[in-house]
Length: 195
Image 1 (cartoon, one colour):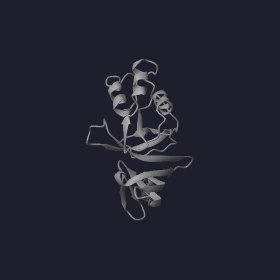
Image 2 (spheres, one colour):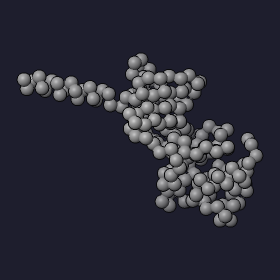
Image 3 (cartoon, one colour):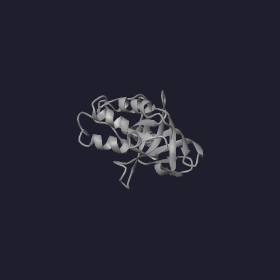
Image 4 (cartoon, helix red, strand yellow):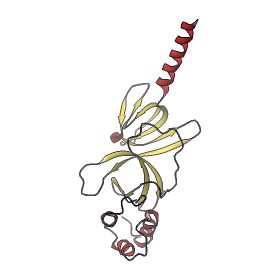
């Protein structure tokens, strides 16, 4: 009897371990192909459990995760420290702002799962990444608890090269350089010309 109990517990633990990290997802590849099913989620790839086919973040445009009581819509974003960098990293991006010219994302680097509903609104206490609609890469424009204040003007000047007026407003103190959403909102108003 103890042997049967041990075997039952062992099988249960094995089953739970096997199921851990599996998610129902709808993924969209860069070529617009859509794939639905159960996937194992590891740091920079999704593996379809039925076919064992691996999809790396570089091949994925976005995916929707269906949890027990939640749904998350992630975008695969390419992050560069600054425009001059030749290298970039992939991350999960969760869109928190979508303007006419700019999108803002919260980013998750190196995660192998998110088992909760991600908040889909702007949070000034979380690093924010911005991308102009016609660009491929996102850039950090956020300052957290004083971290990132050195060089913030340089990052803003590099990002808003198409709108010197917004930089002038920030330099004159009319827009606080610490308020990313305020800067982006004003950019949409001050520099409304389309791409």
